[in-house]
Length: 80
Image: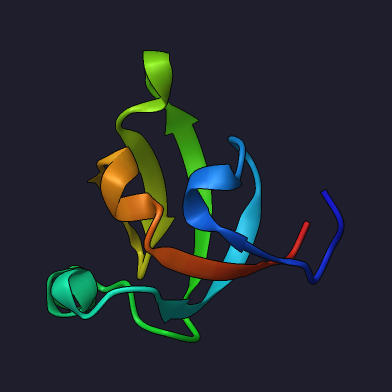
C-alpha cells in the first residue's frame, strides 16, 4: 500500500505501521481514546485472526485487540 495514504485501520495488514488521524463515529470515540488510541499516536498491526476478526495492534507501548467493527472506525495515515 502506498505510504501516506489515508485508510481505515481495518484495511491494514500485519507489519504495517500508521498514525491515527481521526475516528469516523462519536459512539466509539471515547472508548478508543481510553484504550490509548489517540489521534497522532503511531500504531502497528501485529496480527489478524482468522476471518479478520479480531486484530491485534501495538499502540502506546502495549498490545491491544480490537474487533473488526471497531477498527473500521479508525482513519489512519500509513507509514509503510
